Amino acid sequence: MLDLLHRYLSDHLLLTQSEIDRVSASVQCRHLDKGAMLLSFCESATFVAFVLRGCLRAYFADDDGSEHVLHFAPEGWCLTDTESFLTRKPSSLAIDAIEASDVFLFERTALHELRRDIPSVSAFYNATVERALRLLQQRVTGSLRKTAEQRYRAFIELYPGLDARIPQYQIASYIGVSPEFLSKLRGRIVRDKSRTS
Image (cartoon, rainbow, N blue to C red; front, side, top):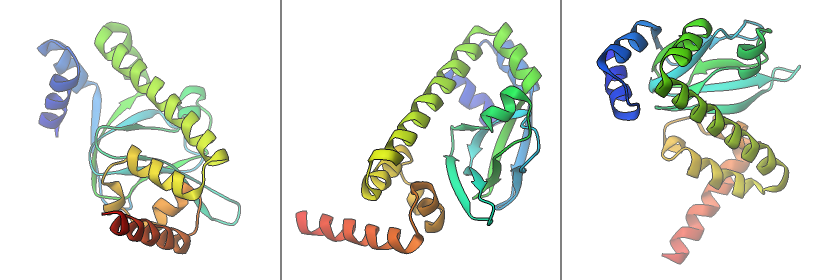
């Protein structure tokens, strides 16, 4: 897995070989089978997970056990419970693998040291956080003013190809509709496409 990380770092960050070696030495490699938990409710999120292969999801649960997907993290995405990571409070989210996944975990202290000592890591982290904040704002405003179809189209645009990889009920949870409604919505979109082609 470290070869994949080296390749990713070389492709996306301007790092010297010694900096690549330092980043590699600062991470924990983890393989997760499909369904495996990375973070459970009420644990403290001490890491940021970077997905090299597969897909993770972050979700919360209502008192009745109903799950609501907040984020997906396919290849090239990072994921954590941000509030727990920053405040050290117990996590209100759980994170699991919805596909077999290979991830790198950047622990809080190691990430802080990398950001302090390697400017391009700090810039990459800042850009990742800014992107996450922008996407979260779009998700919140979209849930308040977009129709279910618009939210589904936004999901497809944000996560190209993911709709073919993950269960429909996960997507339905993400956009806030029932799986049955999503199935009808997808059917209508396909019919509309075939009429216009």
